[in-house]
Structures are given as structure tokens and as C-alpha cells.
Image 1: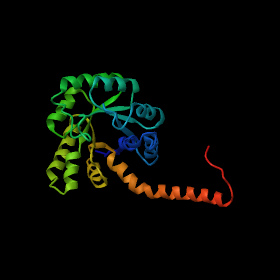
Image 2: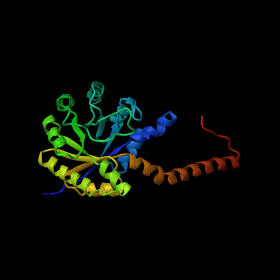
Image 3: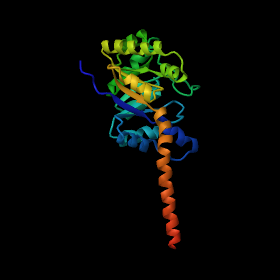
Image 4: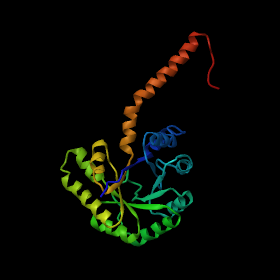
Length: 257
């Protein structure tokens, strides 16, 4: 069986986190999305949380208008978010668990324990032409529940495994659970995505699973961009200052008006 290409979805939530720390418009999540696409991203993910701690309503509206790749809206299964998604009509919506007290999404959705409620949400979103995925742990009960709910896609939560790898703890059993879960989901007719906590090495390992056709990665990429991209930004700033100083030496007093 041929192995399909794997897609990269870049989550730009934490560009908005940096922006919101100061207020104003910079850094612009939409520009970050456009830069990610130009660099090879196949789509953009943004999580519109109830508390709007990073992505704002205006961000998702502008993303839908301006990017030329699919927009994946991460959202809780609430009436407010369903209404927003049906109006926005992103390419896809990923239903995630959400608690106001958490720093970030801490685990997979309990699809098995919320089948009736989630079935209605998935049906409403599908009726609006939105492809729905459920963000779940790679557990047979959760995967089987996703099938019963009617979601065509699951995104496997990789955070527990990534945390173990990063901390140097035994991780083989957790990785095996992901491997078996991806195979089970594929055999059940689900499209399989994965994400949370991935870095270069862990993303490479998950990309080697033929059942997984999409990875969604955010925090690590934004953090890496701050380091890898800072030198280029400083060089550009130094050049701009040197150009201004050269004008001063030439007697020019022109400025930005």
C-alpha cells in the first residue's frame, strides 16, 4: 500500500500570546500564518478559546479571509463556538477539551463519555460543510467512540509521550500506544492526525507512522522561530539604523510621518 504524503499544520496561537502581552497589533498572527505557508506549511491551526487568551475573534476572521491554505479551527464543544464556526466556515474544526485553569490543552477529549453531546456538535458542523476531528488519546475506547459519534477524523494527543521523551523517562509503552491507536483508527475508516508537544525528533518519529497523514505543531515552532529568526531580525534592524545614521551624516532630517 503506498504511503501518502504527510501534511504540516502550523498552530499560530502563541504569536497571539506574545502580541497580547503588550497589546496592539504586533506580532501579527496572520502575517505569521502567511510566512509559515510560504515556508511550506500545508495549513494553519488556531484555537479560539472561551477566555480569548491568545487568538481573538478578529484573528480567525482575517485568517479565513487572507490565507490561501486550509484553516483548522480548534474549539471547545460549546454553543458559542459552534455558532462562530458555522458563521466562519473554516475548512476544518478540531474539537478539544478546554478548562479555564489550564495553561494549554492538557489531554485528549473524553469522547467516550460525551458521545451524545459530541454527536450533535459534529452533525451541526458537518451540516455547515466543516470537516470535524476529535482530539483524543490513542485509546481504543476513545477511537471507537469517535466512529460512533460520526467524526471522520481524529487527532491523536501526543503530549504524554513527548513529555516523557523530553524528561528522559521511559517512553516506549506510550509510543506503542500511539502506534496501535493509529492503526486501529485507520482500520476503522478514520483519517488520522497527531499533535501536541512535538519537536523535530518526535515529529520525525510520528511522521514515520504511515497511518498518520497530518501533524499540527505550534508552540515548539514559535519558540524555535524566536531563536532561529532573531539573528535575521537583528541584522535587519542594524541595517535600518545604519541607513538612518548615513542620512544624518549626509545632513538629511527626513523621517516617518
